[in-house]
Length: 135
Length: 186
Image 1 (cartoon, each protein chain N blue to C red):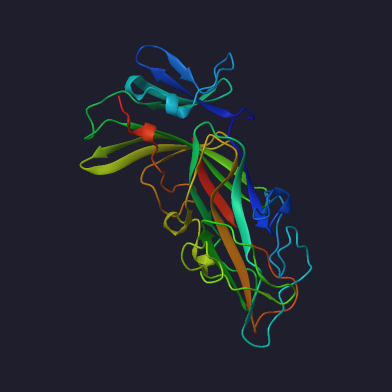
Image 2: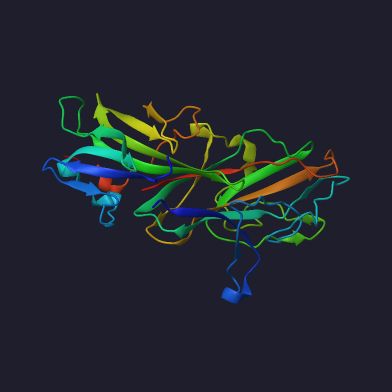
C-alpha cells in the first residue's frame, strides 16, 4: 500500500467531492458541504479503507459533526508517521461523544471513542470552524 | 498530498537575513546534540563539563516546526513529549519550556550556558520544567501554542530544552534521547 490516503465526501444529491479528483482538481477539507454530507470515505488508490456514515439518525442530542485529520507523529530520528482520523462528534445526554477511526498507512484501522488514555495517537483535537456545521 | 513538515533547530543570529533572525537547520533526520555552544551542528565539541560544585548547563536548544509543503487547510494542536525516562545519565536533568519568541542562547562556550528561565529568556511561556514529565500519555503531552494556515514557513511556538549536569555527572558521552512532535493537519 504505497498510495497516499485521500478522502471523498458523498452528498445526498448524489455528488462526490474529492480531495483529489481523477482530473487532478484538489479540494480542501473546509470545502465539504456539511449540510448535504451523507458519507465520508478514506481511499488508498482504488481501495476503500473505511466509510463514515453521516446520515441523520434518531440518536443523540445533536447531529454528527464530521472530524478528519492527518495526525503527524515525528521526531529527529526519521520517524514520520501519518495517522488519518475520521469520524464524528455529537452530544449524547449532554456529553460530547465521538467515534473515530484511526487509519494507519499500512492499512490498519482502529476504532476509538473517548479521547485520551495512554495511547500515543489518541489525544484530543482542536475543532475547526468548518466542523461546527452539520446536516 | 500531505503537508511536508520539518523539525528545525534555531541558532545564532543570521546576518544574511537581517541580524535578528535565527539560522534554521533541518534536524528532521539528523540527531542533534546539546553542548556549551550555540552551533547549528555542534558535534562533540564543547561538551558540558561536570562541575565540582553546583550545576553546568548546556546552551539552550531552540526547535520549531517548519512547513516545507503547505497543508490544504491548517496545522493545529501541536504537542511535544518524551519517553518519560531520563537516559542522558547519572547527575543530569533536562529542562523544557515553550517560547513565543526566539532568544539567542547565551553563556560561556566550553563552560556553561545560561540557565533556561524567564529571566534569561524573555520569550518563555512560564518556567522551564523537567522534560521527562511530558510523555505520550494523552494528558501528559506538552501543548505548544499557535498554528499555521495553508502556508509554508516556520510555525508554532518554539520548544526549548537544556541539559543540566550536576556534580554526580559522569564524564564521557551521555545516553541518547528522542523527543517527539505530534500535530494535526486538515
